[in-house]
Image (cartoon, rainbow, N blue to C red; front, side, top):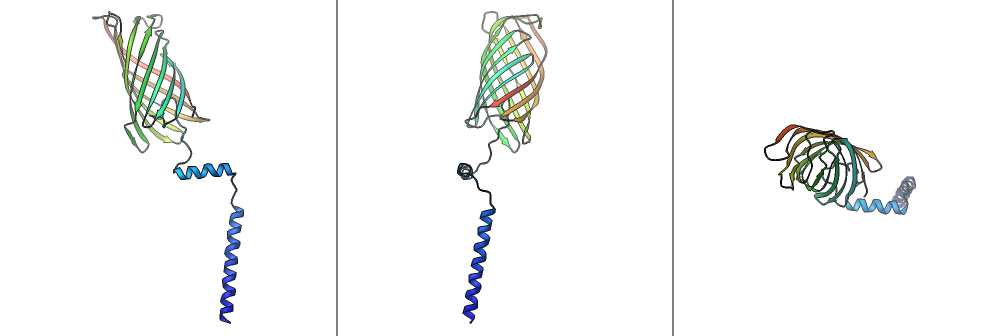
Length: 240
């Protein structure tokens, strides 16, 4: 008798567990096989959704394999650029038009991330290029013409304050060296900051400004020092 009672209780318990499991499986939403496969691959890799914030300046270095295009308007410069992330650092090509001086600059640069602590990251930058200056004095009375070699060290700091917002610190120290015999020189020390915001659809917008000093000379013994500054609004897109 006791065995019969225990057998009935065991069968009842197994039927109850089976019924609850079937009900849970029926209530769970079904995923298409492709989505399930992608989810399984992401879970296996230990990663989630890719971070899309940043294309113009942020992040301080793009993730490996990521490409971005950007453009900006401002004063005294307009510009466009291309960024390519490579594990731990990135390469950048950019073109700038200084519409105050009617000068154009073509540069190749690199960034290397040296610090990432929580929301804060930091990367020194270095670019080399050439400047073609028309010498126009319509907007800049002290401008001079020439072909100059540009060496531009700098620093980019980023602080992530939200999923879609990064605050930026910017330091640029471009040095222009005349390639002709008159030994023309130009040096700027600019510091400032800005903010880059993710708009969706792989697009990010930038607003930034810098102030500092600018020293220059057209020929030996004719040096000048004045206020240096820049302001820009940019838009960038992640390609992949």
